[in-house]
Image (cartoon, rainbow, N blue to C red):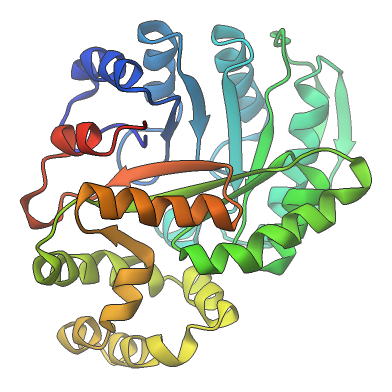
Length: 319
């Protein structure tokens, strides 16, 4: 389950984390955009629900210095031995450049270099290295985790997907359909094949257990437009083969006509990337992601059509 849960303060999550355990959920996955940072909710979960596996999807590679990023990851891995998964990615020009005032330059190279540095530094090795996108002089992490945390890379198109397989322990994927997984997951596995290890594929899946399809689609269009007009996501959906269906939205958005952009998003696009319907229908749709190659479905509850997130986690509970 994605956390924090909408509408609940962090101080209220102790009860929520315990409820997730009781309902059979195995993982909680945080994110980092304009709400809570990626680490704090997981630190609380480490203390309040030690049964849960903790993942962050994702921390941007640009918005913290390399040493601070390793310190944060090492601290969580030390607090939750064997239960923390570190997700790193380029993020987007909106978060990195517009919100944090950091140039969004060479996102592929920056992510690759951060992964390489983290893998070395988390072992306690003293790192003095000039990477293509930054330099580290004599850093040694003061906490060496008892178990090295897996590092996953947020990936959309082929280059990052290959990097996730080659350089990391797997990929985190996002804003895609179950059928899209059939295209992206094999790229990760093929790139990682020489090391003989299994690669984890985490997918953040947006779910709204409501049978009011018209209302869900109406409200979901705002979320889709907000994300799929961001250049990195637009390029991904062009690459995945959804360009013709989204061309009307992109053109209207660029022209400044937000109302027309929303109206141009086809129903079938909404239905492919937003899981909705009865709880049983939602579970069936989520299973399609797993069948297509997702190893960890990280559900994100969307409160469209008046859906109560706390009730939704009960309705969607595993088993």
